[in-house]
Image (cartoon, rainbow, N blue to C red; front, side):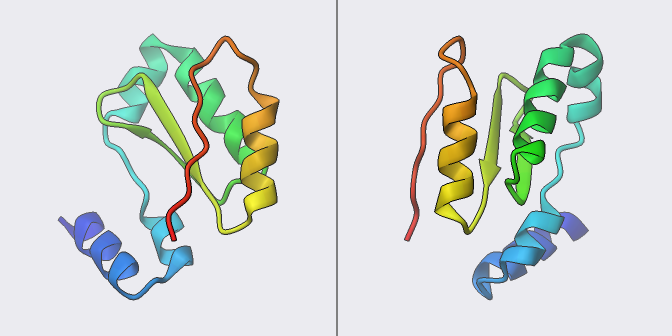
Length: 91
């Protein structure tokens, strides 16, 4: 529960660095062994400069976060259309 309380605190206090550092999914290692493409996608996102990337739930979706819109746009454009992709914005 430590990670959950860290994330809640980070969001409440609008602390982006703590949000990035608190992103964790216990199932990633299991999924990465069975589906290395998911791990590759996450690593590509990090290599493209997003500050945080994470597999959601038990897999199939990887998302990246950044304060810098140009980094997000670049990451979005660098993934070809074989993937379903969305660029979203939260205030």
